[in-house]
Image (cartoon, rainbow, N blue to C red; front, side, top):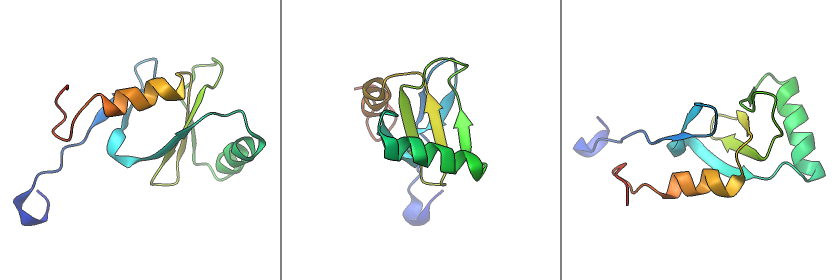
Length: 94
């Protein structure tokens, strides 16, 4: 229970192949095509903070988490974003 008696629910979303992440911890969802994002992926891999959830498929979305982890997904960025926004603050479908 959080301060003030409010309960903060953890919103979970599927990023493909049954991989689930906490929507509450996402900072951004971007395409992997630009050179700066490719460098960021490599830097994150070198630091041991990269999670590859593509199962060998093409990376279509790069999800940056508030923990510093970067998650690679084979689902389009728009699809991941829609899965986050398809739920309201109570975790109920809208």
